[in-house]
Length: 325
Image (tube, rainbow, N blue to C red; front, side, top):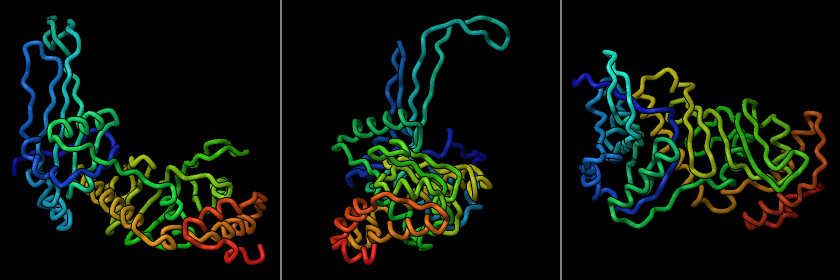
């Protein structure tokens, strides 16, 4: 082994998921060899470096599934270095010299197939890497993947019904944020830390027709417990908790990649479901209201509008779900 330890910068936040054309694989070598010439008045330099996880310490001890995953991945580490203004700095021996501080930002670009490319890094740094790939590869601007609020509603519905989402178990939902058209709960409602299926502010928010734009909790994905938050703009934050917290950097990294790969595949599968399986039945709102009532909270809102919306999306007649309501 080389004795090289694997590391990454910051939190496990993936700020962009994009769908590139198939030509992306053909430009991998060119991207990895790209390195801007350093000018005499050097102010900025960008580069792509291909990462081979098998060269890092700890790789032989990985679970076989993670070794297979790492072999299937394309990994590019995008580095941007920019020089600040010349200033006087104090060296270790106490002397003063003129120097330009170097600021470095790093983004990892990760994909198994060009249809799902993950950008791991800060938001502005991710934007820079995204633009640089398009510039260097001469391909059309790819489509960014975002999460439909009705996908979050479907996940919440499955959790309320104690059901799995594909091959993924929902162990808990504890974080939600959603916007609406204004109510006594305000334009924006944010909940963090409670069990969402028992949180009356969340139930009331849904019954008033608010749309979830953020959802988080703990999920079991291929035997790994992962605490994560999904944002409607496609951002995914893998928390330093559960199995992630107890792992080294390489295992954390691969667990995170496996997680977003599974979540993204689940979302794509959801988008292709028949309408009656993609959207919860309208009487889900009746069940939410009855649950609230059983907990001593009598919600008097007119829930017909959100029920009609679900019925329309499913291609159903609402009256068949109303019964005696």
